[in-house]
Each structure stands twice: as C-alpha cells, then as structure tokens.
Length: 164
Image 1: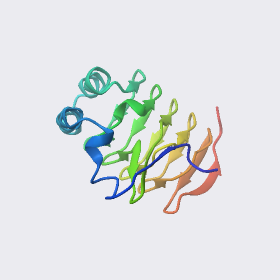
Image 2 (image 1 turned 45 degrees about the vertical axis):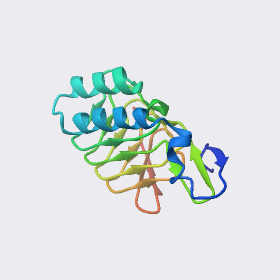
Image 3 (image 1 turned 30 degrees about the horizontal axis):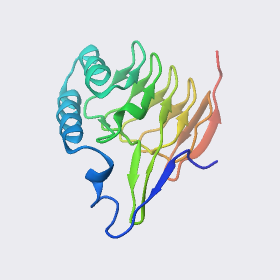
Image 4 (image 1 turned 90 degrees about the horizontal axis):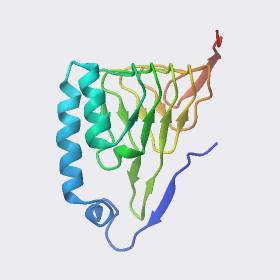
C-alpha cells in the first residue's frame, strides 16, 4: 500500500528552493524554536503542551515523546498521536517531503498504545495502528497494521502481536 500524500508539482528550481512559496518563513521559525525547546525538555507534560499549544498537533493523554524527537519542521499540525504511546529517542516524524519536481504533504497518524523505538523515521502519509510496535532504526514508509511488530530498513513485518 502506498503512502497517502498530496502531490504538488513545481517548475524551475527544486521544490525545497521554493520552500517559502509553500509555507510562511515566520511559521517555520516558530516551529523550529518550539520544537527545539521540546526536544530537550525532560517533562512529558511540557512537551505535549508545547506541541498542542504552539504547533497545533493532536496528542493523546499520557503520550510520551523521548528526548531529541524531531517533529515536522513545516507542517506539524498534520501529525496526530493517540493516547499512551511512546515515541522513542531521536525519532523523526515527517509530514512533508520536498523533491526536485514536486513536494508532497501527508498526515501522519499514530494510534493508541503504540511503541516507536529509538532513531526511527516516519515518512508522510502513513498510519500506524493501535498497539503496534516499531523496532529501533526503522524507516516507516508504509502503513503499519494494528497489533503488529515491524522493524528494519526496509521496514518488514516481523510478527502479529496479541491484542490482549
């Protein structure tokens, strides 16, 4: 299954060079400053408050973002994380990708009771189902079903988990 992204073609220079035609410079500055503070804040409540209040992210109760997690620098409002999930150390969650001839945007939806290991990269347009486990270092390039364990690069299905 392919990722669910909207595609926006560009002409002339590459899409990243045209960044500020797609998103406000001041929005990027705000997101950068807030996300850098959140990355090093040891308080889970403070991180979630920063993400909800200033970045308009949807974050469920008791969700924990480990140190150094990097949320999308341009479209964090397209990230939704359910309740009681863990986002591991130094994970990156992207809701955009800028390519040579186009840029793409896609919602990232992470369910309830999800465990994401350290150093993962979650690409735009993916959904990670409830109670899924994503092994450390995984590049999540497609949807992850509920109650499954995935790992690796490329990401591979490891096993079905008990939903109890």
